[in-house]
Structures are given as C-alpha cells and as structure tokens.
Length: 375
Figure (cartoon, rainbow, N blue to C red):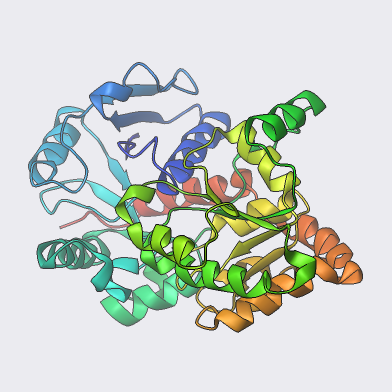
C-alpha cells in the first residue's frame, strides 16, 4: 500500500504541529507501508524522512490555491497512490484514490467576518463541503468539532472519527537552568507575568484579554504584573496595539512574536498564570501545553476547551471582561487552587499522547482501504 500525505503546511502553527507529529509517529510504528510526503519545494531539504519507507516529493502548488485543485491529483496519479491524507480541509475533487481528510474545526464558517473577503469565505465553504462529502473518512480533533461537522455538513456520524491532539515531543523535553537564565535575561523577565500563546486572529479574543488585564491591574497587588503575548502577525491587527495604548499599558504588555520551542517551554514554566480566552477552538493545544508544565490555566467555558482541560483549569466566560479578570485573580491569589491546578493539569496533559493518536489514525487508514472501491 502506498499512502500520500500533504505536508505543505509542515512549518505552520497548529496544523504544522499535527503534521510533524503524525509523520514522526508513523515512522515509529509502520515500516511496512510506503509513504509519500508532498511538501513545498523550499522544505524539500529540511524534512527528514523518519524511516526508509518514507519519500519526500516537492509540490509547487501553494495551499488554498486554484492550482492545487489540479496539481495534487496529478501528483497522486504519478506516484500511484492508494490513499491520500489531507491534514487540512482541502480535498481536490479530481482525486482518484481513497482519501482521509482532517477537519480541525469550522472556524471559517463560525466566524466568516474574520476572513479577508467574500471570496475567501466562499472558497472555504466549498472546500469544506467537498472534503466532508467526497472523502472516505473524516478525522477531527474533538467531540465538539465532530458535532460542528455533523450539524453543518450532514454526513453520517460514523464517517467522522475523533482523534485528539497532544503535546509536541520537541516541546516536552526539560530545559536546563542555563536556558532558564538565558530566557530571563534575553526577554527581561524580572516581574511576574501572565502568558498567552497562539495566533492573534480576532476570535482569539485578545482585546478582551487586554481589557481584563487592565481591570486586574487597578488593584495595587497586581501593579507589577505583566502580560506576555506570543503570537504571529501582530502588525496585521493594530487594534491590539490601540488597546494597549488606550490603557497606557505599553510598558506592561509585551508582544514577543514567534519564539523557538525551547524558549516557549521556559516561558510556560516562568509564567505565573496562562490565559487563553478564545471564542472558538477545534482543540486548543496551548492550554494543554501549559498544564503539562504545571502552570495554572484560565480558559474559556465554550467550544472544545472544557473538553480538553477537564477539571484542571479555571473556566471563564470569554465574552465577559470581568469574568476573565476574576479567573486570573483566582488563579494568581488562591494558593490551594494553584496547587490543585498544577497537580491536575499535569495529570490531564499526560492523558493525551501522539503515540496513541497516530496509532488510531493508522488504523483509520487500514479501515478505509478495506472499504468498497470508491466511485
């Protein structure tokens, strides 16, 4: 059997983590199947095949482009592929082989106002519908996302399989004391700080987080508290900068942009509290990462986030600035609660495993191949 996986988003946030761990674990558990990894030409020399049965092939069609609708099916025919896994929601209709698609969430349909234009919304809607109906199996990352998919695309429930995400192994290694000191000095982290990690798109709700941070700092005990935001493309969302200047918080709110995984691991551990007030998540990996390192988590009581964190985090109403601020206050001040969150968070994070998740994905590949021939 020969399986192709679209890895053109290998270096992205979110989906990139999914792809990297998928490939790595498949290399560990399956040496019998031939795997073809379709990657961007610039990534060709940087993606190391995890085992001898993996081959990396360049594909020049950009993700979410018209050209991929034709070039991906051509590549699959050229490589004589039996099964194709699209780890994001694009599945060109000309594909001739069996297929598995991962739909992480329905964010573009839930919040169309955050897309750049109507064409982008129409494209996302059409591609999601095609992927949901033409694929042989849909993978998704939470029961919440599965319900969203069933409601919006009206596919049979047994067509959708939930396979959870987990902590990236590259993040999980313990940094040494020298790394802690280097990060403290490099980023001038002298004061206690609240941490946010993720992209900074509007549904992440960072303006309300800044509002809540300002509300919290009105209390003298929190005057030294800082807010550190790690997220890409800050220049695209000037409203965040304006919110910071509105409250004169430019010395207290810091935007770090992208940081290496080793630095991120240290920041998770140095933070006094982790805050993730997102309005919608397919899974929500950053809270799980923070719990892994024993940092108390404040996150939203909506979407998949309660499913992911269980009873190991403080849940707040993400639409209420006061609720977010109160959650942060409890997480910072209640020593017994902090101890409980640290213990339960680490235990909860250990319940998720890429080894188990990818083993289930490999089972799905086998189940799809045993199905009747596609039309």
